Amino acid sequence: MKAAMVTKASIEDGIEVQTVDKPVPAKGEVLVQVTASAINPVDWKLVKYGAYKSYPGPLGCDFAGVVTALGDDVKDFAVGDEVMGFTRLMEAGRGTFAQFLVAEASCCIRKPASMPFDEASTFGVGSLTAALALFFHQKLAKPSTSPKDQGYYLVWGASSSVGLFAVQLAKAAGFQVIGTCSPRNFDLVKSFGADFVLDSNKETALLGEIDNIIKDVELKYALDCIGADTALHCAIALASGGILCTIAGEPKSSPEDIEVIPTLLGGYEKDVKKKRFVEDFILNDLNSFLLKKGLIKGNPTQILDGGLSAVKEGFELSSTGKVSGKKLVLLQHT
Image (cartoon, rainbow, N blue to C red; front, side, top):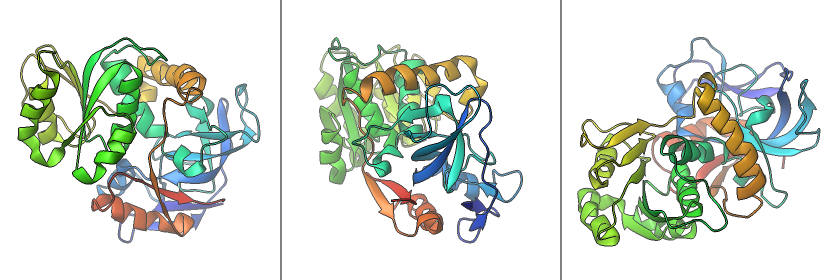
């Protein structure tokens, strides 16, 4: 089969489409013919900063496609099922920029029939990272069709992939959502459920605007999707005892009465409690509730021409910040 592989620590000339062995699903795994693959920042960062121990290595972790074979003990899926999900990074046979991949069945989400494959491919890492922040680390009440009022939730970088999923999940859990982003993405973030959208370019001035929104209500929860500097703004905005989750860097300093929790999906399988949470959220929240009730949707997408050969272009666009409010996606079998 064909797969985009990294051959050295360079985005410019370290990515090649090669012929590699088609993987075979092991116990508890499915073989998926890939239809769409979404690009995550972690994909190009692993290449650029030389994280691979050996070359060539597989690329990508978000996908949507069709199940073509089952490993032993897979009972929840059948050949022909349309699925979406994520795979572990840098492991042979699991790269999503490939014609086929193997994935743990427990990490696969049933794709709604009405959802396009490109949108479906954006779910894996983004939705589950947001879920880890809100429901694993911050221990918020799970989404429901008639949630109780939970107060306010702040998402800094709400137009990012994780940010858009966090907005939807916080809204479904009963929060009034305050999102920050650039003005060009205001309408996008509002369309995903944010009650208030603030200009992220104002930075520290936003703290006063947040206070004007929440008035006498304490802000207890926030998610920062941008970096250390904005994470500090989030920490300052929180009331005493607040919990801040970060996905792109911790603040260099923060109020002592604020808990700061770095939130990463990577390596989840090594933490028994986190692994159990991820698998349960996929089965009982995404598959059985959120998707069926139409309470969550994928990111807007920008489709790159050229299939696997467009991986380099996608990495360059993502790494230089030339895409905003959209997820870069490669299509293979349309």
